[in-house]
Amino acid sequence: MVPNPALRIDHALGMVVIEFRNSAGGLSWSIPSARELAAYRAAVQADPVPNARAVPPAPLPSTDAPSETSRPDARSASRDQAAVAPSAPARGQRSG
Image 1: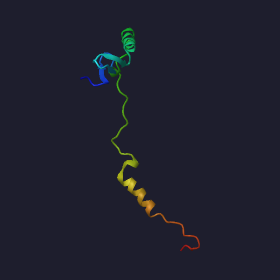
Image 2 (image 1 turned 90 degrees about the vertical axis):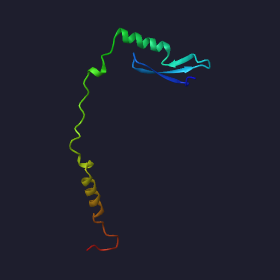
Image 3 (image 1 turned 45 degrees about the horizontal axis):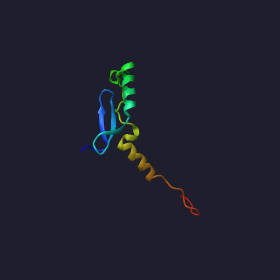
Image 4 (image 1 turned 45 degrees about the vertical axis):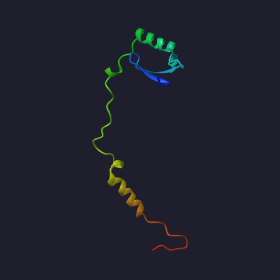
C-alpha cells in the first residue's frame, strides 16, 4: 500500500512532488499538477537557469574572536555591576 499522500523527488526539476492516490492506487492529482510540471520542464529546456552551485557562496562572518556580549566574563561583569549598584534612599530617610 502506498502512503497517501506520497512525496516524490523530481531530480530533473529539483523539486518535491506531492502525489495523492485513489483507492485503487492510481494517481488522482499532484502538487504541482501534471500541467504545471510540464510547464516547468518546458521552461528548463527552453532557458536553463545557471547551476546555483557554480556561483561561489558569500563569505561568512568571522567567528574567530568572540564578541563582547558572547564572552562569559563580560556578561557576568554586567550582572555584578547591576547587583552592587547603589539604590536611592527610601522616602523619608536621609542618606549618609
